[in-house]
Image 1: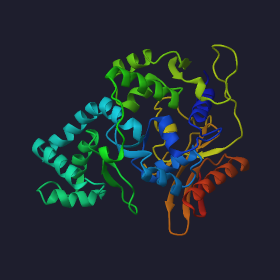
Image 2: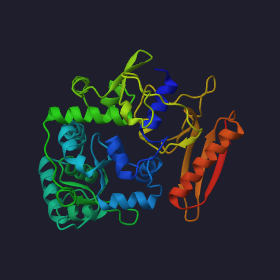
Image 3: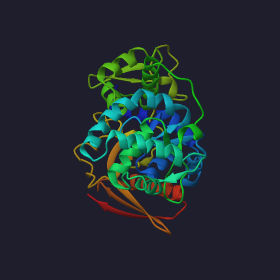
Length: 371
């Protein structure tokens, strides 16, 4: 499969082109886990793919508990649907905790403190008493536990990985924590084999075409586990080779794109031209270390100077970087774009910036520099 076809398939599957999904929670279910350490950037990722097009609408779904924000899959924040939380934690937390254990050994935190922290959290959050991280730190300090910094964060992360707490409603600009058993309904347990198979099916369906390497990085799995899970995931996935590397995807998740011939891959035409201001850590960019949006031929896209600069794509080509500053009265979008873009392409980038302004409910000030 040609690179441009791969990229168009991904954009269509993730609903970045074509009809959006009804809700932000539907996007989280499609992608299974959405990296979300930059919360509002991650909310914009959901808005780009759904009919929940504003920050207010996405946050309302988050606050309702339709999906939650927690440390899962890898040692970082993710959005995950409430009904997927427990089985994903059971499957992936042991490997993540082994990574976290190295950090704990380097600090002053010991097993006794971990146990006491879990007890305090269970007591402090009981009865839907949602607390911010700072408020939890005050409770910890009263018992001689770390009040702030990485040690506090690691203790709370252990509680997340063990399924005791997860993110609660947002209070102002601060996230809160809640007891999982109070905000997430019980769900049936899965065997490890069932969970691995489901995770493989869901990953390649929501992120395909993707490779085994993409899957192992995304899910923190061993190659052995990833290959076994893929083999057991059934006949719904189709394999294509990209530069000699096997990739898998689910053609059924390309609405209206099937060619109609049995066994033939879905066809995904170019569709209307558009630009994408992908948020920091967006799944469409972050997931694929090897096969990703290329710069124009013989004209490399500007490099991101730091983590706050994200990717600008026009159609399926990387043409620059951008970042945003949300002020009281406007959103400032700074972009570093290739000087070779034509007027139509620049108009598409302007439209994408206006979309960001609509998301925040503010006018946009776009400041562009050319390379």
